[in-house]
Amino acid sequence: MDDPTSPSTSWLTTKLESFKLRWERIKNLYQPENRYAIERNLPFRAGLYTFAFGVALGYLKALPEGIKRFRDYQSGKKFLSPFDVARRRLDYFIVYGMRSGARVGFKLAFTPFMILLSTTHLTVFRNKFSAWYLPMTSALTCTIAAYPFGVTGWVQGFLFGATSGSLFASAIWLAAWYMERSTDGLYRLLKKEYEDNMQENIRVWKQNASQPKTLFGMKWAFHGKELNEIEADESEDDW
Image 1 (cartoon, rainbow, N blue to C red):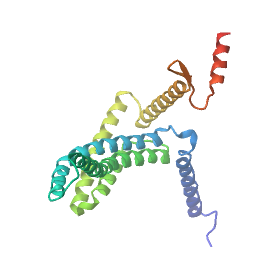
Image 2: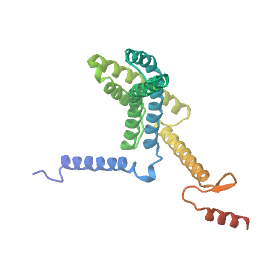
Image 3: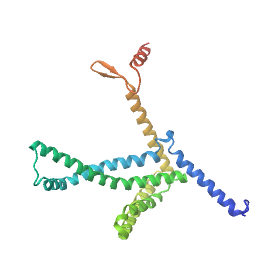
């Protein structure tokens, strides 16, 4: 039986305690009070915007193919009226275009989402940011994305991810050197500015949404605030 005071056992215990502490930081990231944290908010926002762009791009890309397919589908069939033809064409374009757009959107959103998610969560896990995270996460993500293309695709994906990640890392190093900060200090500064800006935007939005709106000479309340409460607040302000 191992002696709990032996150097190997104490080293293992220290490592386990360190891992538990780091894992607690990851779990605390998803507490309600941290919903505006950059590590939690930025990857999902980037993935959402990229997905929307991919849907639009895939839809436009699929339109010529959709027109050709509908002509093939239309040949030899009888329709009730020209309006029926237009309606079926529109339905076909919507379904075919959105299916193609969703496919392109998922492909485009996967890479930036996973790179940002793994980089920011690795920063929280280690409680320190390093520019070396970007080449590692980019290479790993692009290798996974190139999985359907075989070994050649893996190599190309790895090289592309490592190269693009190194370029971003170089830009971060140069920015940190110009601002006379460490890369971790630059990350903390950007994190603070991002989260402060998010909280300010949410505060302004809630403040505007809670104000009574005038429509056709009538006041409308939002967010559960009753009209008589609004009028009472206004009467207090008058005094």
